[in-house]
Length: 114
Image (cartoon, rainbow, N blue to C red):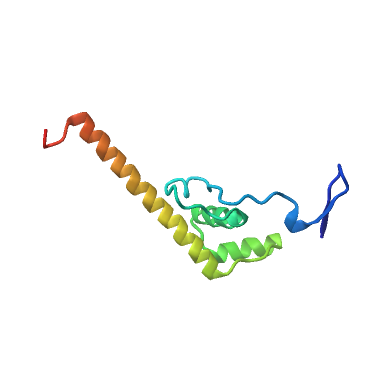
């Protein structure tokens, strides 16, 4: 399949129809770890895994969705690796939030050493 620009009649393959961004942050998951970036071309993989997990579903639901939408299905190993990244992001974010809350409580009430 080729994509043709309506303005300049430039023909591109479907994989080049949009600009590819490199080293961009993905939603809140990568914001918790400032030095880690997810690769932008796989941004859609992370989003679909997050969506499936937020519905309380798993890999078999993703397979069914992809079959009905006539999409290529990612492997269960890839799904598991993205699931681990989502979990890691949530754990890092939760730990950072707890550290910030503890710091604010200590500042508000004073530490035991004061």
